[in-house]
Amino acid sequence: MIIISYFSAEKDVEMIAIYSEHKSPRLNFILTQLFTRVLGCDYFLTDKLNDYMLSPQTGIAYCNNDPHKGLWIKPSGMLFESGYHVISDPCIGTWCDMPVFFVNRTGTSDEEVPFDIFGAVFYLLSRMEEYRSQQLDKHGRYKYEASILKQMNCITHPIVDEWTFALKRLLQAKNPDLDFSPRRFRFIPTIDMEHPFLYRNKGVANLIFLMKDLGERQFKRFCDRLLTILRFKDDPYFNFPLIIKLYHEVKVKGLFFAHRGPYGQYDRNYIFPSKRLRKMMRVMDKDNCVLLHPSYVAAFNNIHLCHEKMDLERVLNHQINASRQHYLRIRFPESFRLLQSAGIYHDYSVLYYNQYGFRTGTSIPYPFYDIENERETPLMIHTTAVMDIALKRYFNQTPDEALATITELYNSVKAVGGDFITLFHNSTLSEIDEWKGWRRMYIRMIRNLAKD
Image 1 (tube, one colour):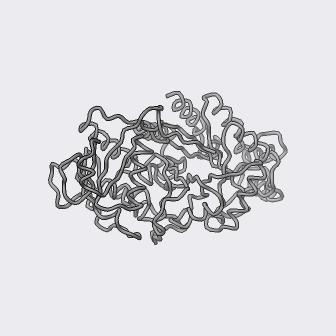
Image 2 (image 1 turned 120 degrees about the vertical axis):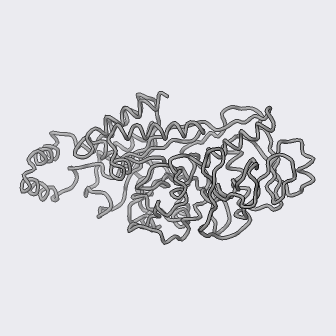
Image 3 (image 1 turned 90 degrees about the vertical axis):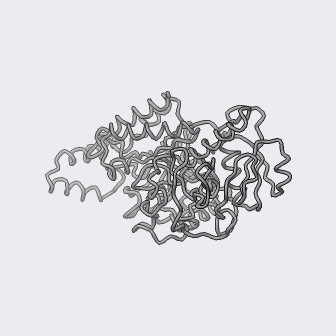
């Protein structure tokens, strides 16, 4: 479905020697993510101090006492524990003008890496603070206000990636000849197709809506609804041809997440199946990707999830292995186990509904680590940076202000070679009611970011 290229060129990669008094699946997971996937630099891990000291490679000592070779990082113990728990006192500090946590309480001010960077990265990527959490809203979503990134006030930066590149600079200071092959930056616009129609495909319900429009003296809306039902006007939500044309012009490949669930309070707002929509999805899928948008009721229900996945696969005539949850309803670890059981191995749901930025602290895809089973899984988490709803309804931004915010996030991700993933809805690009001006902004955004 989506091929991820981690390295920018085909050439020999450098080897980093890493010494740790103990080994663990958590440590291997973090080292592979930071050095292999992000920096394009191989590593070898040893628990034998003598092997490390005799190694000619640039090194990192991840141990309690400084062996006086390479960089020294003192462990917090996070990577050698089992199970999960919320850190009540994470010991926050600063490093290279960046907020950090798991700072070495007994360290000295001249330490090059004064905090457990590997443990802090694991805490953020694994989403340990969210495991079995009771800090949920009415839709069962973890609250941003309870997160450590809220406490540190740094969610608008891919802080894990910035830590990693700061670590790279320290390693290169030890060895100026050390070279890396970091992954390529990617811009990935995504559209959630929750409500493909505003007026059409609602059956007799439209008679009620027409009478309501007249009763409320909404004569323009009455005329728009009637002309659209009678096929004299295009439905304002059905703007997919415009989006596809835009992507084609700027040579960007977008992702479209299609809702195939039942009609309901929090699900799709049209009643009858649409041949036109099915045909449009097949057109979209030729140059872009149409993926699954599980319904509200399917978020924690395997039967509904599998049924909706199979329904979309019948429409597209091929298998689907990626999704984004409707209403961003995810729970760690249940949601990601459920997705894997349904044959989904790429998830784009990890962002907060009311806050833009990087919920996991990173802009770079990584495998979901199941803490309860202490293993890395095949499911890749793709952190989305920004959503239209958050900008408009929770930050009350104008289209111009939103474009400025998006551009700032884009620049921070490009600096670390991450994936800049945006989330918009076809309904917010309708140029009606509260969303007037947002389609024009979106077109500017796509053109500006695609050419950069």
